[in-house]
Length: 318
Ligand code: 8YV
Image 1 (tube, rainbow, N blue to C red):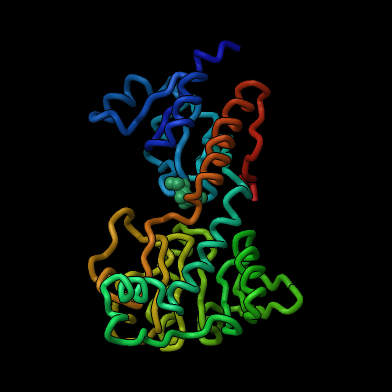
Image 2 (image 1 turned 90 degrees about the vertical axis):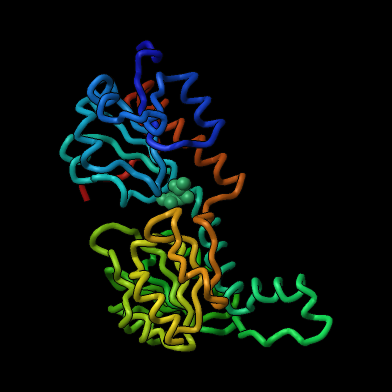
């Protein structure tokens, strides 16, 4: 097959090296560079056989419907909540993700946020830089080791977080669709019960409609004034208005957030709390991991158009 005839639609900017490799191998159309997307799609929609997108961006139903000859979606990430998976399954479109490669980084950041919130790393950094230490003592923070960690979603990332937390002697509780019967991990059938029992409630489950807003005021009140919310999963999981209320009322101790409902916009009020540590969706953002992710995105497309199968497809018929 002549590879230069294969048209790939790139939804949002990708890493430079990946963009270069893709355009050396395929005819790439950068959707984000088109002002009149409707015009572009009526002219070229039929030519597109592959999409390259990011986990946080996906491919919505409307756009997918405009690509009648789409065969494969290669995702830079593991999240598929932004992809219309039902239509993909119906149309036998392959969805391939960058499985496994980012698990360690995401788990590392979750623990980083646990430590940053409880040991007040940002507050203490500001205090030291501003010269506050010259005239006063640093405030006392809270201990991490031995505190209870509750994980919502015990998949690969949740398990990697639990493994790290175990090294801090933290008892592990989790909530998932089923009891996985793991020794020493305590299963909770509801998020409220888990929140009520733990010091850190860490979200490690997929986003999407069915989980939207699951962390609401009731869950936050159950987490309570000794509890901290950590979110390295998806912003849509948290009702941000409720989170702001909980923070204002001191109903929770604090929060460590890497993801937000309407990225890159962060609700102004969230930025005003000293007990909230904010990072800009960087859980997988290390050079090592991003290089691997870029390689997998390319390899999935290359393998599919060379051999007829992607290397890390997800099972759409579950
Ligand atoms: C990436 C992600 O930050 O894997 C995911 O679903 O959201 C992240 O790893 C993102 O895809 C890159 O923009």
